[in-house]
Image 1 (cartoon, rainbow, N blue to C red):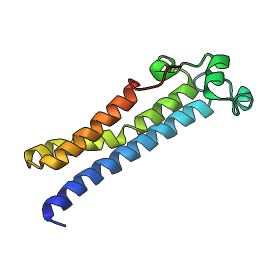
Image 2: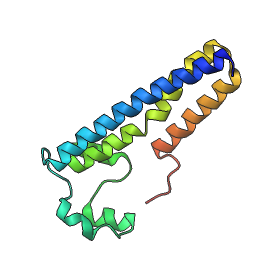
Image 3: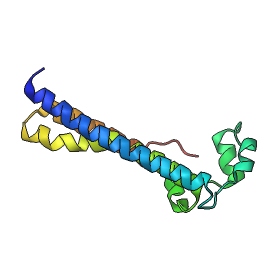
Length: 135
């Protein structure tokens, strides 16, 4: 491994480490808020067992739980706040790629630029729901 490759991997690893730890801390805080009852729940915990075995479409119909990005309107509920922190945790990889991309550009490593940019594009399209099936 060259010094250049090592430096790039270490940059990615530092960002991955910090973002993962921050995401874990946020998830832990959100869980404490939820479990401690500091925010009301959209669905009371006592009702959850009756929904566990349902298909997603039936769960959404019975609970009026929003789907897609609609859940973001309900971040004031402890259980939905937990979902939000998991979604933030899912941003760790794109954040790390976005951090190394400028360095790859500066070093004119065009193959790695194309790969990182393509991965960011795929993740953005997937998160947007543009290609999601209806319903």
